Image (cartoon, rainbow, N blue to C red; front, top):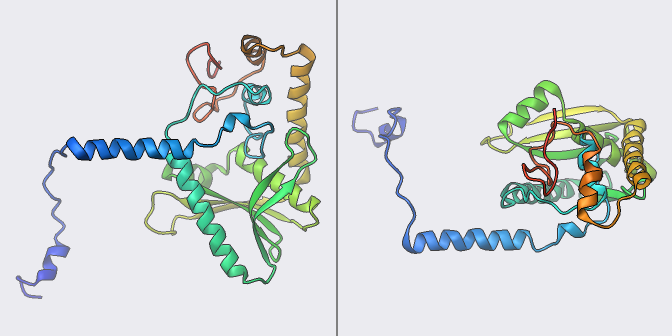
Length: 266
């Protein structure tokens, strides 16, 4: 290669000089604000507060208080940002389902976005991501950042992921499917390839799912025994009677004010 080879430019490892980024202003700043507002309105067009039942993704939380507040229908006090992360996850789930449906080619081996029923009035069912009838497996996609992916690799899934997967397994078996394994499929959210994809799997256990559903019923019965009244203030007092766990980061009621949960109490 000669010194004046134009390809030399792309092999230069010298870092570019650091420059101060220019702030958005004028039309650009106005457009950015409009895009954020449009996105927020679009992703919040469904009133999630109208949900009457818990889903499999919620019941694995180690926090009894969080479950109690959800069962009582307490309004959220922590909106959790602008929904960008959850929207990305939804879109990737949709794309992965399209990929599995393409691979299925009407063979009947795979099912995606399969609605399953659970033996619980309070947790009536959910939608599993991926069923493989050859591997006898229920798989749940998780779009994870590098830190969460590392934790999955080192420590396995958090309780809410594991219980969610086994609940889907229970629902699938009740629908007549044969399930022997459940899997959490950690997809790298920040990487440029799938080299860091990580799968955690274990044998399906009906008891794991049934124990989780029984816990929901037990907390609901405790609420009913005391009586939740009609006012939000009385619900807050009831909620404070339940122990907390360090599961606050994405909790709908995590706040430092008295309008909801006071957060983790050590």
